[in-house]
Image (cartoon, rainbow, N blue to C red; front, side, top):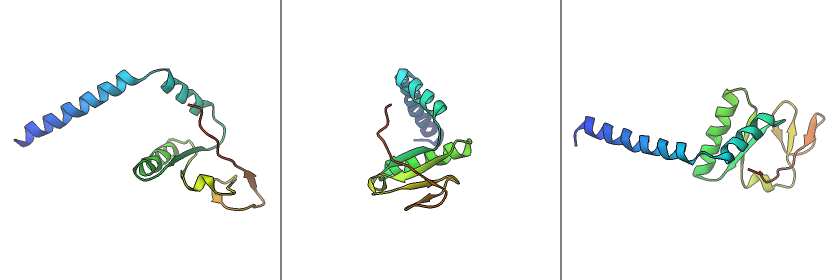
Length: 108
């Protein structure tokens, strides 16, 4: 296969994937966007393995757009205590400037 033919093939595959994503958008996407807009505090993104790597990139993207986001490995969310300080640094255990943070299941 020639390089140009291969490039066209790849772009056609990607185009079909984008079209199926567009077709799959529904009220759940709109609800998720509303929740993100109305949120107070940090956006916590979790995952394990490959989904964890993707979650780290999503958290970085949120941070680059001005939203405060953190990545938390899914196994860490079950730890006995997690404290989020007001300066956006994560610590385990109480500090003078900390508030209790308890993960909850998303309602999306």
